[in-house]
Image (cartoon, rainbow, N blue to C red; front, top):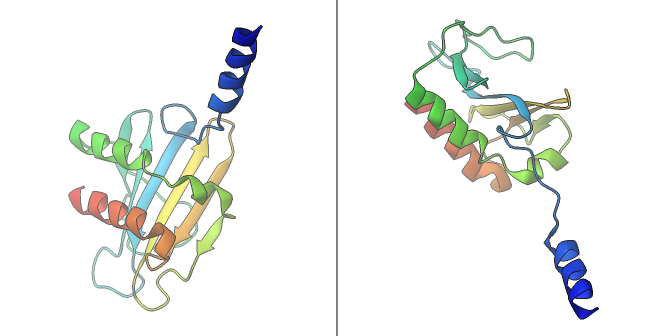
Length: 149
């Protein structure tokens, strides 16, 4: 009887809610950076879907409309970078409502876009201010990934 109780206790304490990941619950993962006042390519957005990575197709400035993506995937090396980034999405981000977090690009510091489509069909999109302390490390990871693309 002690063994049954101990097993039940271990199972109850060992269970936790799993956060979405690309391999289990993301149908796609979009990420990138954007700046409102710059010269040249001010928005660099990427979409990871079905183990392929697509760059935005000539997007110069980010608006919250549909983002056009190229139809040819980037290299396997860049896909691996995007997959690694998708695994770094902070769990607390899913507790935030969709939309702006902080004040992205309000003082020319840029903004970082993250959008996921869960396997349930639900789409979540955030535009993150890189100065928000709780997301600073994740924004730095996005910046690094974008610069390596």
